[in-house]
Image (tube, rainbow, N blue to C red):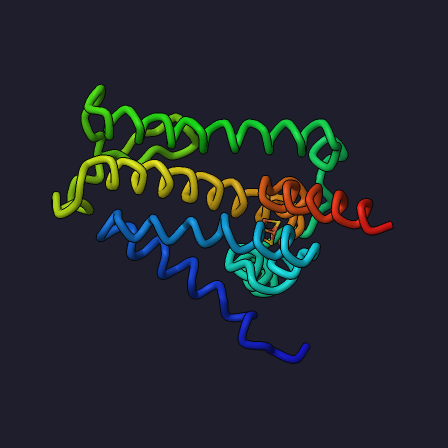
Length: 190
Ligand code: SF4
């Protein structure tokens, strides 16, 4: 297969998680991964982001090519609409909770928590990544977003190991949402 520049976008994943380890404010860059697929779906009615420009999709593809995936079929329930929509609602609910916690810190109701949470269960101290250079709510959002991105990355990697390389994409919340948007747009133009 001919290699294109976007096949190397997995490097962005490495940079993102690596930089966030040393400076949590870099986690704000994760908003790009939220905005770009939405812009492409709403603006152009396509899933070009998923097909080409998603760094996570490219990471999973590259690791699969290196033989890290068992390449088994996913269970049918993981492909069902109920699971995909349910997971999307759960995921965006968790994003809402990141925004709410940020608001609490902004309003002074809570103090900054310098932790990164994995799988919404394990909480790791991460104080070295925040120097105090910006207002606490800015850092709180970064800790929350980094936790969400890391958690979804870990789930994606586990799914890649157990099933086919890009099995995560079957129930990825952004993929499900942009698919809904594209379907709605296609329905309007028919
Ligand atoms: S489904 Fe999700 S992880 Fe997969 S390519 Fe699309 S945005 Fe990326």
